Amino acid sequence: FILSANDDPLDCAEHLHVIRDYVFLSMDSRKLQNRFLAHLQGTMAESLLAETESLNGRVGAYLAALAARLDYPVSFTHGDYASILLKALKFQPILDGRSPLERLMQYFDLFSGLFQEQCFVLVSAKTYFAEDALQQLYKMAAYQKWNLLLLESRASPPLPPEDCCIVDSDLCVLRLDFPD
Image (tube, rainbow, N blue to C red; front, side, top):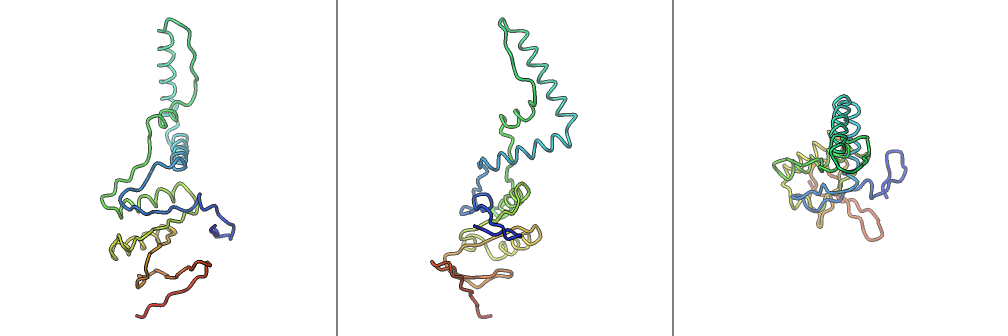
């Protein structure tokens, strides 16, 4: 478990994102899709209310006209067609950054914007990214208040602002001091 800012335990499944592949970041999570759809519905209700009501009215009128042309009686549900269309058309976020680092930062930004208290666990990031890319990531993480944890297979001199430690099998934390 993780402790939140108020020392209450958090469910790891809800708050941890383990990232091993920096080229392909999966956007297929049901949790992400549901939260993104809820965000879209909020935007439709707040910012596009008139347009959404107009769309729902036009779709309802179209369905009524279609039903009138059929040779047998039919029924359909009146309601919020816009949300149904968004879901049916797989309206979803994409990562369009040119580099793996840009896409990774978009991924962090998306999840941090849709969910509270997220922690991103990067496995072997120091093997994949150059030091300057990691520094850029750390600056953005500090600015955006992203929580990052790097898991590396071997110790290397820390970059600012890294704090290195080893966690043994008994979950004892050993701090590492590297000579300057």
